[in-house]
Length: 266
Image (cartoon, rainbow, N blue to C red; front, side):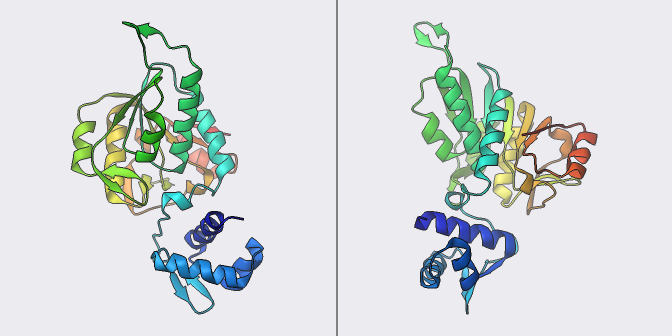
């Protein structure tokens, strides 16, 4: 197992449980306790955790993993969700998409499909298969080299944890566009408060995506359902479709369905 994978597993455990012990982590990852201690020391130097005697704890209750350490968690489920979301997107539409591990997989699925589409030519140049509006730098870097994708990147200040552009500059661009579909990744879906995320500025730009779209699709694995985060994006009444995995609870699915949301479980 690579260091990156170990760090991802260790940080994910901290995000879920709030603490970890060296011996337990070493056993779970099948490495030596000395390796885990070195990993924890290096992660502490990056201020991603707090070292304790015999282990580590998370910085706080609302713990946000940097995006580069979150991609391993529920990876298979996220890829299935991404394919299902891509199936809902027609050719030639304008799609807004925010940042996150699941939406990154959705963007990749859309890019792959666009590459296989036979785009019509307008005035000698290929018409875009999809117009992609995003505030996510990592998504933009993958889409920018694809001629089948018309890419619109919002302005804003980059958050290193999520590679998202946020703030008034991003809001200015969003006020001048109209979206056919907004695809949102979230940190929580609460039956009363709706869509939620860890950071208030990310909530603000995601809210704008929802407001500017004719249709809103939420891409969220089952671990996000029934969970709250710090900042509210919008209510359930703004959501048209939620795509999740088969581990989602029947109670939560019933709640979402009662709110008029189409739930697709893959």
